[in-house]
Length: 234
Image 1 (cartoon, one colour):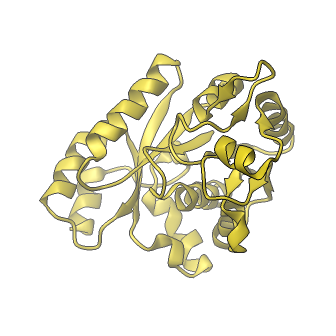
Image 2 (cartoon, rainbow, N blue to C red; image 1 turned 120 degrees about the vertical axis):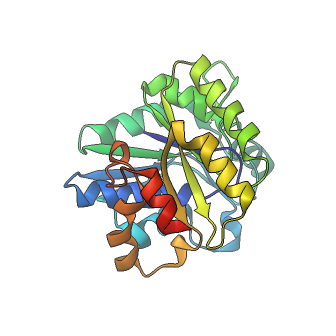
């Protein structure tokens, strides 16, 4: 399953951790793969480190890392490092499929960010990886203004590639305003979950116990009534 987003900094890593926690609570063996990690020159933990801290997947792998905080292909070129080849990524993910019940693949930035190169020398994206793997996608979206257009464009791009997809709100505000409720109403037909703002800062034990309640059964959670959820969230 591919975890992508409408943009950068929308909560992909925390949503990946939440799906991991919910799936493991349901008894699944989970692997998380990050094809391209950028911004590693800062010395801060990478996305796999964050997922491991919050949800402790059975396996966590980063396939390529680059120091500059850019799109992975651009970061590889700036650092004069080898870009990740598409089928190297495909083979690495499939190797984990053989050993796990669920493999989550977290992208970088949005759906069409250049990730690396094909053998032909052309750039490939997370969308291309989803097609090559035959995997469905989870689109992580913002709750606020502008999210409907960005989410619709991302879902349309996936639909054109015949990639099934649903949406998770990456950070639902503690004090939602009219725009948040209006967006929620529009997103509900495709909505598979909503994480509270600050979920990534929770104690890992609390995070793991709470995660199933943020996600629908399609993502191994227990959230099955958006009206009840909205009443509680409000």
